Length: 361
Image (cartoon, rainbow, N blue to C red; front, side, top):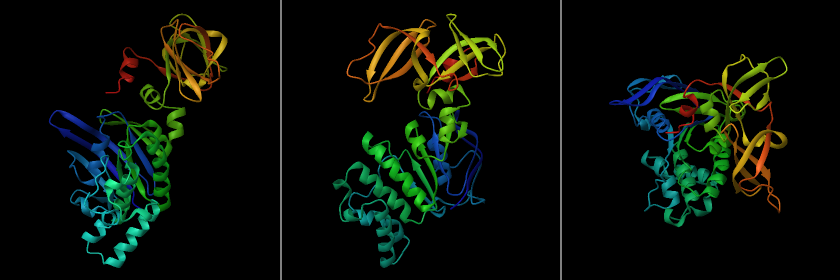
């Protein structure tokens, strides 16, 4: 399967910049997800790789070959769109075999190919049904089988699960990764769904405003994000503003805006430096003393309650408590909170940065 490389890719429409100086390499057999808010340039990059869009600047290389003059149909690409695009007048078998048939592949061969991919997506028993007779998840599986039946070595998935119901999305994303890995395909998957990205990817590429912000494994991107934006966008986090009170080899002490002191792992910051602490809700715990806050909302989410509280420092703090027969917290309750100092990340804070980092448009 091929390596894919984008070098200095820029895409402009007049004064609108959809992608700017993007450099990205995808290794042979790697499953990479481009993640980011709407309008960040994710789909633009996929369409440039596919040859649907022509970039303003830069080059796309597949297996080291410049794709500048190579039409879409000759790039060995399978493309699965957000909107399920099956031929409604063709049955499942006819949809999946469409690619080989237009390439004049003999009937015994296109039948073999179609059977192979329908078996892989577990729809061989529905090959005589029409798209309207299938549920959304089954329709998207047919779209995937059709993309693969062309002999694609590179699979491009543009928000492939976003049109499906929540339960179907969860089931299908695991099936998708299983299928891709079993075939050894190089895959680029676009999504705005953080959980989806973390569950299917070998690597996540986080984009914002046409640029790549970070690129790392799902685990590292979640546990140790390099920027406030990544911490805020990937999963959920609490952002607490303060300044360094003291630091030594054992720990760093941060003073919140109301004077509350919290300890985190030792850092390279100096006394007086303005900082932001990022800590995930699962690493915030009720305590006898610590950050004093007032509960503002309690939401039941099945296995636990999500508690939102407002600290004396005016920071919003979210934490989880196990669901029990009797609720432990109600709106208006006083609560003291502590954090797991090993799981907190400290970022430098500059004027206006926190507000800018948490804007998702």
